[in-house]
Image (tube, rainbow, N blue to C red):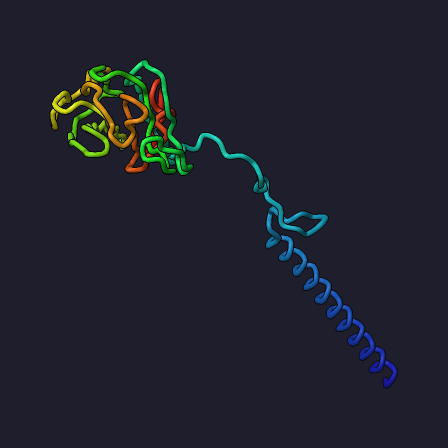
Length: 218
């Protein structure tokens, strides 16, 4: 009787162990199934690295995009300046260099261009402009100033008194500014035109302007 009870106990224990093992296996199987369900579709099976069907590209030029930037351009103005006289040049613009003045017998800068002529010869305007000043000077004779616009002005020294255009006159290129007279401070050089040209208030070499096309600065 006692032996039968022991056999029954062992049978019960074995059955319980089998049930527990089956339950454990079932739980493990369900856990794996749930893991597969939540795995992202774009997860690589081999590397477990997230991938996309169209990965972003770098260093690829973008086209067909409108350019709304404004191009900045610098406009330049050029003008042709005529010769005021076709006679010979007898003295050049010296810039900052000192030259001998035969009349005063000293050394000084020569601020213009001297063109030979005879008393009474016509002097022509180098470009269209407006007469802004006419003055009689003890050293330079009668001087006429013409404003050509764009910062350019010209001065004609050594003209005869009463032979010039009046202040306010609109004068055209090659039109007469006045007639030659004398220049007391340069009398030893004979009758001649002393021409000075300014750009934005600064003296420039007249030979850079007259008889050629000149690019005006803005």
